[in-house]
Image (cartoon, rainbow, N blue to C red; front, side):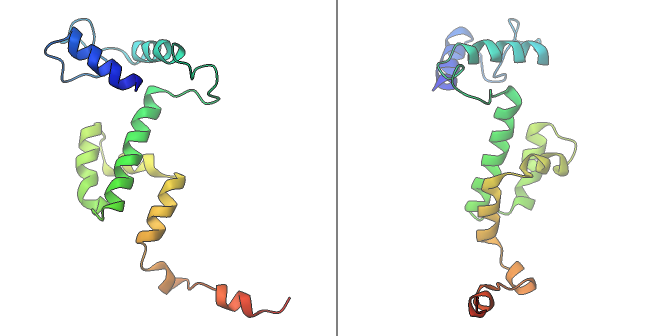
Length: 137
């Protein structure tokens, strides 16, 4: 909700806004990473969540979440990642697809989705539950 209100405010302030989510006063100038982090922290600290959330988000965590959610959605929709990752990588400004895929490692939601799409691992490492159930205790 906060980001929606922020976007509405950007549209009010900058009639030609469409490029930068955190624009500088002069649209042709880029903001430094330090200033973006400072402004983000100010905005976060102004929310009701700032005092109750144990893990404070960062601008980079928003980017990370975007990448993971996008990849999860593609997998759930059956869209091949190898087809889409080059586009996502370019969009993020990464030098390679591996740089983009790095965002996805150690993400809990990935395991559920990958397991539901995986068709080969059972052929390589079969489920042993039936065998385990037949062993007397």
